[in-house]
Length: 316
Image (cartoon, rainbow, N blue to C red; front, side, top):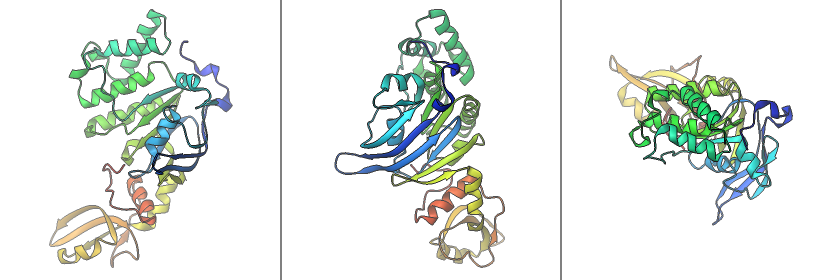
């Protein structure tokens, strides 16, 4: 069966729905505990610390794992009773995509496009060329996968998820191991793709969401603890992100109260920007008027007694 096009969807089917999703692994570990989400067109961010349940949720959406309780659907199709239909609708970029090492880039996509149901060779070749151009790999179409850089390999992962022109894209921890320039390119690709698709991007690096994300959820210990716009999360953090200066001998005593975002030394003082974990801000501290989304995330999680992640670092 060929790739479905946008015109084949009803408006009510252009969503991912999760209702009361609970998943318990053997041994009793509760990975998800009553998750309710409805996600529409655009880039949707899923954030959370290590062990929060993000990857479990991704696998359920991709029909790779059955939930213990609850119901999940993609484009109106149930992930349990309609697995073939769901798989035709989604593209999946897992945390690791490193197979096909001895094949050439274009060969990989052509094979996967054929397996997805694209039987017309001419249309398949056109689609492969289109996707390679889209992700910036057109110039290395004949290069073997084993010779790709880390950034190019992630782009190939995106390409294989897109080659059958899916309406929904599930992306799990997309920029692990990439350098800053490659991360910027990846964010640009995601922002462009999100104009016409529903993208669920699970990441522990808050900056990966970029400016294209207008809706997100924070998940912690298997539960959704925040759902809304990134700007609303930032607004909640304004009173807790501060800047101040202290003598070097005074810094250590503050570390239990402050999640340090950045620090610098000048004229015998330590200048600190950070998030207040508990209690009042240090004497002389000034409130930051424009906290970043990363800082807002830290402030929210610190309010839940969760800290020590570090802005922009790998926390899940």
